Length: 164
Length: 351
Image 1 (cartoon, rainbow over the protein chains, first blue to last red):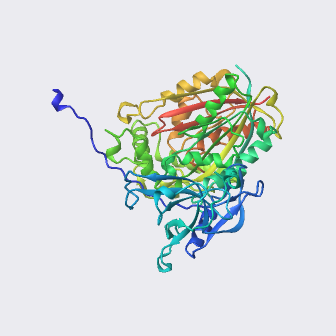
Image 2: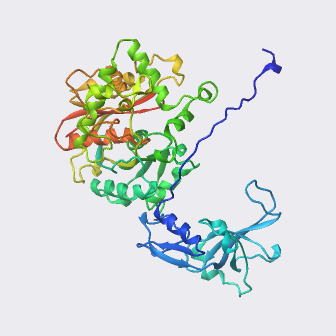
Image 3: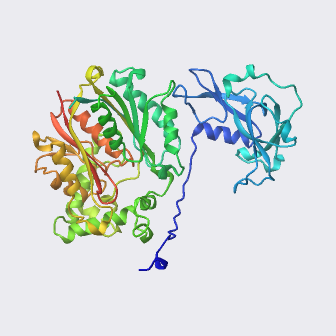
């Protein structure tokens, strides 16, 4: 066989389908999202509030409990300005991704920030959710289109340094 | 060699479709039960190793989520194998033999029900020459059963008898999934799924988790049951090309059994991971088990086959059998891959 006959790659199509069930905690949280509410859960051991709830406190290795209302406002704990395209994000470049510590939760939530000048995004900035129209709500995090600045005073780093 | 004991064993009840709990939901109580019953305080457990397959969860790095069940803070020493939990036990055993730790938590888990297990198992094949053929889990096993029938080494009636015996014994196993009194003649009247395999020749699809705690040195003998010692353990592998193997025999099981020292003492019973009925006699022959050796006191994988932990469960069930005083020495076996490709043999003995 000459080098030009060499097989360099083949395609073997593969498809697997799944009926994914996320467990009771995530289901409660997803159903609440369809009603425009954010529902977190609390660790009975360390009292940390998790949103979104997976059903477990990874720190303690115990099941989380209760239903805790989480605000759709929060504080930016870190952020990035994204200047490379991604297949699954349909946004104009550049855009801003951020970790947002929602009021009432102890771990940051991932969100997009819009309606602001990129140079002005900063750690400690207060932001609020901008929701899709209610008629378009479903059981998913995409109900929240993005977050935007509220104009409230920044939160000092000392107040959220344990939550980043 | 250090004496390494199985200090405890815990498992879920196995069900066809666990939609009410995630893997982590299942692991929290079972890993905790195994640790508590071992008598070793959780902070003293030196190593944690687990087995699972991301192809069953349908998410890359899904296995990392299992650590959420452990309360791994402060950070723990932890490892994972994309294999049955029996191989996670082997890794932990090696780590204990090296003297690095004196105890280990080992577990395996899976919710095979989320995908189409028959088809998912195609993805373990070589992707160039075998995967594209479309072989699924049952059609691969059927090739092996046909080879055995053609060689005159088994009959369809004997295959049905094996299924009947395992599922009858499993009536005493509270976590088993398919149990009861079945009649060979009625089973043989059922249609083939993939000739020559009928439904009774195939394992159930099972969701569940199981966990074992290993102990050495001062960690031995602190639990609520008698320690059961691993006297030998070895695993070997045959070619992944089905066409290059004689499917009627299992050289890797034979070699693993010899290296593990199966016949260094009397073999009173064996827990064999034979998901398909015809695989049990292949394993018995490879391990040199004579008539009269009790096979699968738990009911084996035909009664419950939690993919990725059915092998670890055989080790746990065998240890429980000895710890309960029902036998003094026996063996446990785990398999992985198509048609018994890879095999692990573990020799267990009471005090």
